[in-house]
Image (cartoon, rainbow, N blue to C red):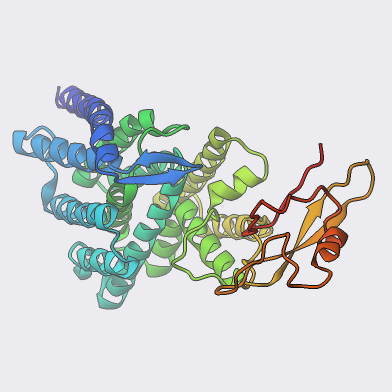
Length: 404
């Protein structure tokens, strides 16, 4: 009878979390558009308040179940949920007011310091766990740059970390992650390509913190080396995404804080995959890594299995680094630009040199005679029909001229 009661309570909790998140995410879309809390993906605005629905539903359902005695959380899971809610509120502030990344990292580290069990991990391992939680939580935010990726990886990781917690008889974190997985599944109804709403920093930081914090709780008491391998296997996809982005920007000489289409999903799209295909590939990769992490946690496979996951992630990062995602560097003002010009007849491709106007230098009209041979010079480098003398043509970008 208690087993049936537990199954029924878990079913009701999961169903409520799924339905409430789906409804609330749909309701929050219009206010997000009205308040301009949006992100632009392929020239379309995507609201960023979907994470508010995930945070509110997860917290309310979990606390209601704990108060009613249906699914008691316990002190450790209660502190974890409270700290994750604070991190989610910090992410909401970042969505609305565009806070700097350093403040998000510092706030996440402070929240992680409040949930790490130092009595079981020790001071040194506890400090490393705080840094790992803060960094991987930020890596989860990077997954929200593409439709469906953050939600899919979050659901898979939540089931894996929840299984590790259940093996350790930590019912509170296991139930909490089950509620989170159901909330993310309800959110995915609106986040599948083309996404109508996104997690934003609020939902992605909340999800990443809850997953990494629960993973640290489940692995507390184990050896540091084996624990690090299992933790990296459980979060292989967000870690690989963060490493890929940092390496590519460093090699390209770009600022690390400058965004761009250089994440895992963006590069898979460059290779020809559809948006849904990229989500399936990343979700499958996360599933394989999570399964290895769960088997290593339960002792079904040896610790060297985590090395295989690390090697596969490293190979994927090195391979995707070869995919070109950055455009050509912007030239200095006044520098020449070679622009292709197709002649009237079919055949070889001609090139024209286009000069950008310098700041403070007025451009003479085409009919002016102040420069000797100006008309003949333009005719020499532009083998196409020229503008009349009454037209004022200004060139601010590379020209692509078609005849006919």
